[in-house]
Amino acid sequence: MANIAAQRIKREFKEVIKSEEVAKCAIRVELVNDNYTELKGEIAGPPDTPYEGGNFILEIKVPETYPFNPPKVRFMTKIWHPNISSVTGAICLDILKDQWAAAMTLRTVLLSLQALLSAAEPDDPQDAVVAKQFKENVEMFQLTARHWTNAYAGGPNANKDFDDKIKKLIEMGVDEHEARVALSSYNWDMERATEQLFS
Amino acid sequence: MNEAIQLLLKFPSLLPRNGQLTEFDGYLNINRTDYEIHLSQVNGKPFLEINEKLSTFRQDIDHLSDIYTNPLNFLDALSETISSKTSSAIKKNLADFYRQVLTEYAEFREFYINLQSCVITPDLSEVSITTLDECDRQHALTVAIDGTFRIARHDLPDRDDFAKPSASLSVLYETFVKAIEELQPYLYLMDRFDSAAWVLDPETPKPKDCYRRIAFDSSISVVITVDPWKPDGIPSLQFLGPERLTNSFRSKVSSNVENWDYKADTFDEILRLLEMEHFPPKPTLDRGEVVLFSTGECCICFSSRLNQKLPEIVCTNPSCEQVFHVECLYQWLVSIAAKTRQTFNELHGECPNCEKHISCPLP
Image (tube, rainbow over all chains, first blue to last red; front, side, top):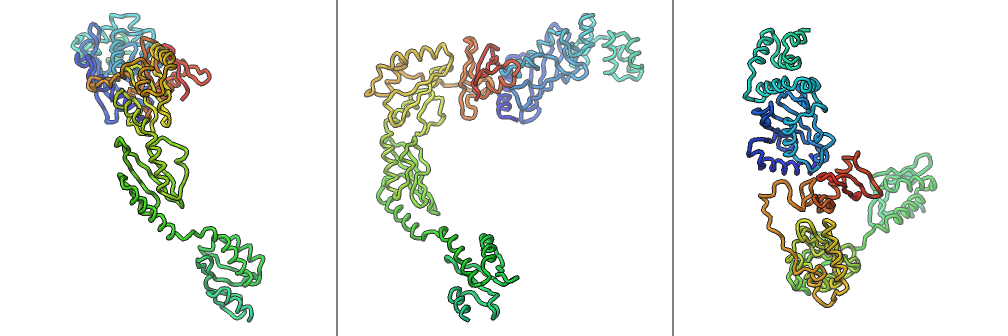
């Protein structure tokens, strides 16, 4: 790893650890290996959003060309969000792409991601299915996102109706996650989800 | 038989193997070197077996064996060729030379009793001398011995007469000592900068370093370059920092410079030029508090020194004024090539901190 990259990440790592946000448990970062090329980030779901109460784990890979190129970040925790792929966790955020600036840091990236959870950009989607639901049926989107937060990120709000539907599909031999994806994609319409799963 | 006697006289360590004098064994001694020889005749031409020592003369041997059929003439010509080719390589008697060096070294040590240290390498190729000047500053000199004495390394600013070799170690040392004496006002001035100012660069100043980068505060600094041999002259001042600050210093200097007093103390004159009572002292930094990067550190690599260089470029946006290394900013502007354009030897693009226009010379 280039000299600059390692030196910078060390400083940034310290900055995050000492930051107010860590004190408030809003963000966290951990080392994955000793040479600072890979880190594990964690952000808390912002209050008054469907993600409230959940903890989302991020994979952060620091390229050798850092800080001239942005870090590669993706969600390890499955999440229902228009700008984050529900399959791969890939993120669509301008500062992680062409709007990256060398003065940005791990802390600003984590805070930007947290802000992205509170303010989705459905017009610049990463996950077309989620974005469509967000635009056409925002209430359904919020319920689904809250359910995903409960299922994968340790969120407190369980949805009995959704859980029952998933249980039914599991009884029919469907994998839990596949069932959840299918139901989420069809606004929790059992019939259409089943049709898709068994076609 | 005449030929056999001639041969014996000329090459006493060569023995004929037969009565026809076509095959010989033995040695040729040329310029104090023995060459083992096995000479025979093949197809009426002399044929010499080529061994390791003779291999450097392979071409000559091939050539001569074409010209001379008579072994005696062949050997004559060969020994002449080898002799002429090796004579230049014979060294002078080295023992005499080393005796000379040692005598010179012993006399030198006896004569200069106030040397701090003086060591000669076991192979007599270098003498290392350290000495103290009148202010107890240590100076080091290394003299290379290769036929004559020559200054190989020293810690003073360079001077033409340092390059001249000399037959005497003392003469060289005298040149060095005289230079140290001449440099005293310069060394004194540099010491005052180091003790009374916040010096950013060089990190560990040596007598050779005839400049100091002195910080006034975290955003503005000046590079003062002094002529070591004329330290009482007006030094060159180069201000680094945001323009609104450097401009005011530049105008101060240009209005005060005509009153420069060559007889007064140079250090005080510099302060007068800058309209300062004294240089601001180095702030005591609490490293524990500095988390990301402190002022004066490059906003891209988060360090002050990168490949021994300090950040030189300042963002001209007054609400930004971040500093950058030329190398870092250049690499940044290149990596956002879509927003960067080049005019002559400058790149123009966006500041990575405030996104306002910034320019950077090509490194």
